[in-house]
Image (cartoon, rainbow over all chains, first blue to last red; front, side, top):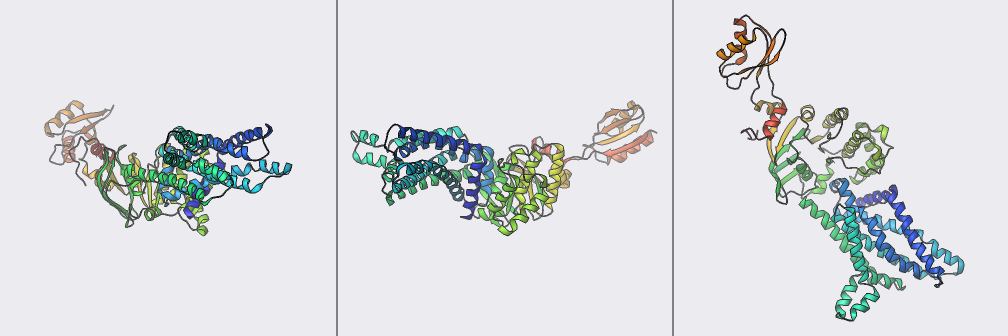
Length: 243
Length: 317
């Protein structure tokens, strides 16, 4: 636990040491807010719906850029050799890095609070669902980080890492989309459709986004992240063997 | 302190270590010598827990490097090859991170970092970002990182590669100082490094240990070199006389001077002591013997003989 926290602190600081975090933050927030405000000005009802529906797509294309360096860069610079020879378990390394990325994203999401606050000032806003949406967004982002980090552990090439995570996340996202499910239902057995769409974080994001906080949805995100983080640790452990 | 027993490592189809065994006693400074790709780094990576061996065992301080990896890693300070560092961090932040992750207790961290900074000559750069430092300073940061938790064992993979001659001397002095308190294993392909700072040398070649011993022991294994003499006398006569009276010892002229010539006498095939025979010969002919000395084989000769494979003697010392 202590070791994970040490890794976590160094990682989190590293986001702010490097210009990547600032460029990423500005672009991420810029794109997200621009589209949400555009939706609002086009006469849609003043709520956060547009913002939260926009979010998965922005995460889909931006997050892999943030996560691609997590392991690939360590391997390229050779610092992985330091990390792996510190008296720390691989699981603690993975946990520390994951948490740092999650906290950084939480920080970015907090910066978007200006939007609901503005709405609040101008005419009131129903806060409980909005807060639920924020939670859903964070969990959703966490699942993307787990996937991105896993792909980063597979290669020392950051471009390969980001492209493969974008493709994977895109597929995962698409199979959970209501339109896709409807389409698939026409020719696939219902069970198979259920199984496939059941893997997709999108489905659970929409479920929490509807405003109902179901423990099953939370459990899903825990399992999803756990699975990819476990695979991540396996890859690193395997590399000790292979050399 | 370190026990290695028939250690093997295979990368895919390539066998990097073919079952090497050696042991290092507490307080020794051991130099790992070998051409690139001999298996030096692989051995160090296994000792530090970065890689798992494919066969055999290794232990540090009585703890197995596979079964008790975390405990072993706590006892080791490691400087990987080419000194990877987090460039964006400040030197003091980086050392603090290393101290924390190595489990140095909170109340001792400040003094541990101060000690490492002092020993490695870093006081002037502690507030700088690592990326701004010169290669020599980066190397010292790498060393400071390795000693910050005061480990009993230091493993340094090519600590002086890529440094300029002045920096090499500085880092070497530093290693000598560290050797007073730590057991040190360092790898290198610079021979002078081993000659200067190591009490023992292990020569590795193609995944096997081809020699293990002190510098003197290794040199003693090398057949004696020739005899070098500066003689004042007619060149043709000297050569002729030597050819006649010292059979099996071909003589060549190394250097022609205005006054005296330098000759080299091969002693390989001689039975009697060649120095005396040669001296008598010179005196009998009334020439002047100005200088006479035996060529001492250097560690370099030993290294070349062991790793170029042109010598039959590849037995273990």
